[in-house]
Image (cartoon, rainbow, N blue to C red; front, side, top):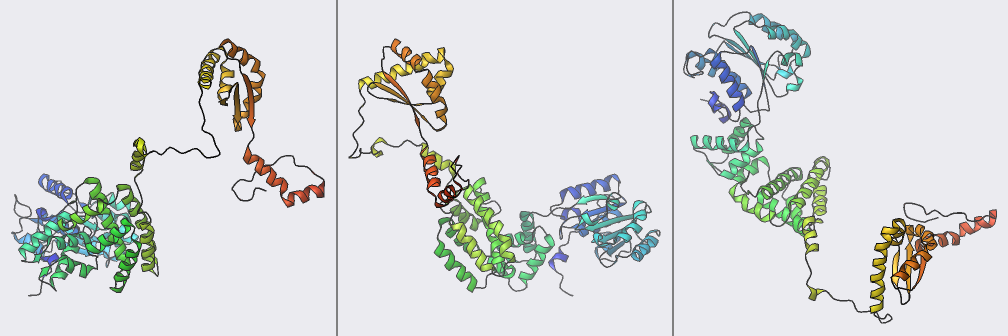
Length: 516
């Protein structure tokens, strides 16, 4: 007898065998129990998740003779459908039957009742491959088929099916199967087939199946053809994946900023014939696992036990913000690496660029450090320059400062506008003088304050303070420099001489560079 592959041998034969499609199973079982069977179904979803298998199980349940257990898989009808010999179940490959003539033949055959069983079930696989004219010819039959006919249209691309067809069918959406469910199913099959496989190997198979149970079983079949004891290395040898230690080394060098080690490691990988496109993909998933583990604090989430301690070690060396930044940059460079004639060079430059972020610090930590009080003993007081004398604060200057503060409070009540203008000034207290210095934009208040100097002096005399008050405008040094630079420019001088002109105004050029 010819060898039967695992994907065919362990094909679901009952609703309970369907993995990861609980919603679809519940709807179909309820329909069978209540007798509310739709005349047409659309089963859509990714490849290898059980669409055609579910259609066959539904066909068995509709024609099963057991009233309590549908399908029973023991009655003649169930056995015939299981073996593919039932005349009541017609499977059509839409990829090779796309024309209107094929649909016309189907319409003719639909009228005749099944010679066996209760229902005639048409399973149209890859239904989106039918031509537009074929769909149009199929519409009337699909909307009002004979009572003994049920149509099941299976497709991986429901968007390509016309809305007029979808509206005439009950649409059930199949989902990708989770990694853990695929791994559990593989463990069951390995136990049944006496296959020795490590947990890490089965996890890698499930991960690379990308939600497809059929792909996972096909991959397991391939590996068992050359080894009896399946390890993680065997799986990665077949699929071309990167071992965890290599991923750990690369990310460790990136996080710690060891650029020379990055270059040497990539050189070894290149000599070993590594596909840098696949390595980039593996590194992205590896970084993602580190980030998820750090956020959730669960180092066994979607990871094997042997990988958990590696992930934990790397996550302790960095922060969530750093990991997000690394992951974002790596994802952005993935397309360039994939499409480049020099993937090794692009990959190398990408990791070197990421290693420059090794000093990345969380802004919250930086702010915390700034806010932490520094010990007084650690603060070094600057010594006064030799040419400068230490500033002496006398009792008199302290008294003037206090009286000036009280004066401003009283002035605020009597003349709020004047008090506000005075507050814009930089105030200096000399021996017998109070200087009000107006800088930059505040100089607009200088003239107004000068007009009220006598009023200010009289109010201060009432406080017992008789001092001279002066108002100064500090000229903008930068503006002076720009003006002088413009006047001294040889082109400006030449223009003034040539046209006998004069400078009216000078406006500095925006954007840096030469101001003239």
